[in-house]
Length: 398
Image (tube, rainbow, N blue to C red):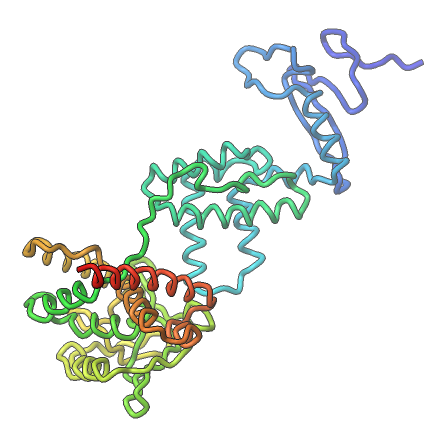
């Protein structure tokens, strides 16, 4: 009869268990994929002490229980050891045919994960508490609630893939961010007609910012996304039919330079009717020195861009955000009746709210705005109706 194998303490070892010369325990097994795997621990059972200077952790027998459970459930015990960064990269490989802007956003999130301790953790070790602590760290690092929520949604999708691939059982990112962080996102507020008038009057007569007067008029009266405005070329303006053809957007930053993308959604491809005010503004743009002295630049087959910076190159959304921020600072410094924070999107939101207040057909407004989902448009109607009701009540009681 064969003598049973024992460890250095005389304890009987089970099949697959052994103890190395350095005292560490080893368990050899075949995973659910048919591959030989190894598990190690300085302890055979949980009550064992760890040799001085060695890292504590689960005992070999505790690890075996996890392995048995994984094998029974078909969990890939080797695959679950990939890191969060590797999992995210795997998710991106599944959807490689995406816009350049999406690829840039993916690179940005990957850099965030690489710079955070979460990125190097094996996915099977990421708990709910780890995911929540990551969100808190993101907040401390200055990320906005909306951005954190978008990143959390992406990571939740990544871990869902891991579940489908039988790498893990639970999704640590399956929680509501509002349970961890306060949503301090400022609600979008349209400019009042009085605020709009003050803004335009100031810009029109200010020596520094008057060159952006036409840009602001067009944003206020068309509802264009700022990237769509930046991408407009002379060919996109149809004065004969009095429409602007929106077929693309111009994006870019200092790291990647300029590039052209299709609109945000398929609904973004549209023809926007031009009012007489917009037609006059566009004609002033074409007749301006900025356009006449434009650089001979071509971006992905597009040229003769209408909205240019002082050096004759196309404007970008970031440039407009910075410019509008400085503009409002200057206005508020000179006036007691301060204007609120104004971004290109506030101007788009103002245009949409104006039309909703005038009870334009929701489907027509959805088309003009390029909304992919009618619910976005209807939400604006609800907001516009509330503001309109407030104004009516004030008029009645004044």
